[in-house]
Image (tube, rainbow, N blue to C red; front, side, top):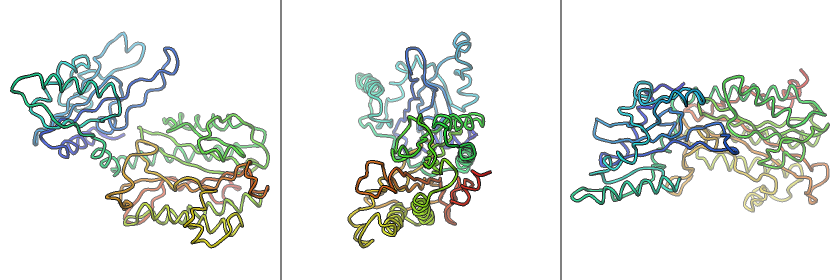
Length: 433
């Protein structure tokens, strides 16, 4: 678990970036109804969690930069014994100060009354501009109250907090990396279990259930809805029905990650339902695996994001030409983006509190340089759906993706999910065991 001292440092750093003439305001995620009076499991807004570690709805964080005496104020729900009987313990105002190291805490019901005073004599308000229209209107109402006072200066600039805050989130601390190693380890165990239990005649739903059992029994939750796609379903990038039979001779593509302390892993493996790759499956799999190996080698401090992408395109294109699925000279095919007939997505994305984590991929119009502390996925794939009549029948219905989570270090890539088997021999051996 990340210590409260780290959350405090993050808040102070953000206030220093905002400047002494500013106010920073962030709201917690609302509860979401699944149906009627039943809620989805609560998941805190990632930015709010990053600055507080506070996992309750109906809360607003106010940061007041004032030189060295920066103040953190939390508006939250007061403790209510009757409500706690139904929903469990609440931090309350006392807990906000004692356990979450806030300088002050007030009831959320007093937010509108107190907030205008914090805006007086400030120039800028930093918040998530445009994310929530209701909160936008609330901020405008506070400003109008200040503007209605004679002789009082009101902020004249609304600034999105996203850029500064998301730059902070892009670089993971030791504690964050530790949490991500945990989520990666749990995902590895879940994928191994899927390989070991998979048999023809089962259903995708059974594999899905096994993934969830492994996540929850290890104090994690899924970081996203798992993809368990057998056969042609593996060619559907966001397939989540997970309810079809596992047929002998098909591949099974599983894209599933665990979330620990709100930090995500994001892992994909593709393996044969019956434990043995066919010749065509093996040939395509080797192209994807070689692509991933080459791309991971590029994940090093000083390389650029686009270098990883370009390497994956080159190796995939070379492999597809060798198999006869693309025809022509490799350089010309790359220029024509011919790989997109089979490799339709980018090589990866940032990873952290969000599965597709925050952070710019370009800086000043140029591809971003990779730096220590960044974490990204590397996930090339090849997809040849059943309807592809322009491709020989023997290749159709094969979807393959291999995805790992990689930490950028000064000494090269650190594959957080590296313990999970991915060579053909290792997969077949694990499934046979």
